[in-house]
Length: 390
Image (tube, rainbow, N blue to C red; front, side):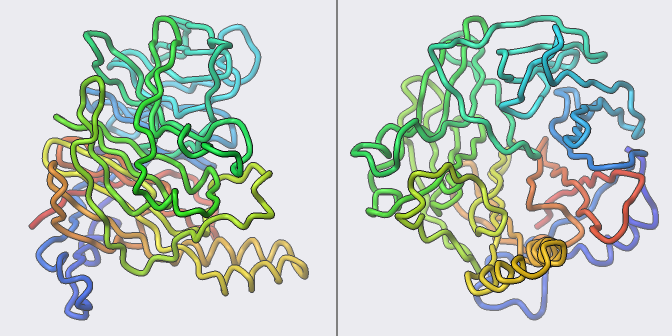
């Protein structure tokens, strides 16, 4: 990776997350710090987001969703290919349900409305499995570290994809009992197996209504367990990594400064409601060979949301700017656990990391997008590589 000396020097002065002003709530993080190791800069005008890192860690897959274009980038920050395969062309995948990710070092794939599509690194289609019309998938928020995961299941490689809400009204009896946190997709047939039902003692069975954003599941596959969280449920679940995927343990989470969803008003239960950037909740789940990492977002207080809603009636552009600024300054924190779910630390993430949209953990390193500067249109994209130190 190409180091940006000025950014690195500034960041190293600011990156230590130990603070003499820590409150008693944050003492669990007092012996941990997050250290900037390296950074990568890519010439690019427009938005760009990291999606995946190749298994050999030589290539980065990024996306500019505004341009419907994906990029393969090497460790020197050079674009080695641009891939635009959305739409109805013969080799296109249609609408992307999931993030595009690496299948191996030479192949990428995406779950699209046409089915499963594999491409080589130049964007040539290498394999196609049509969408099975007997099944239905939910589209997801496409972000860093939230894509499908390859999982060995009964001597076959399956694609582990997030679950989701079922068709029907949220007021229907048994609605929540049908929801699953994960879906296994057979890459040869597109057959689906729904796994990880909502646990009966979760907050979702408290008699309130919850939208798809509240039920959004985050998945991470470790050495022995599949870890699962839901945006509006402060619990870390760990399931056995092999069929029938029984719950092995769960950990209740104590979240700091959180404005979590209180449920969905009854008058909105017939509407499709999805992720809301203003909500507090669990935002990203990652695991490597040492730790489980869980990022959560403070969210906006209801009173502040009401003020911005009133501003929309007067000046929509000003309201958009104020909304973005309010979201960007709210705390993003990261909990660190052992692989058996024992909490080790709770760290406030620095503002120069675009932590709201996720990150990737790979071999003891954490990869974050740089936080966007809404006041200046930059002609480059920056990726940060960090490491936890104790």
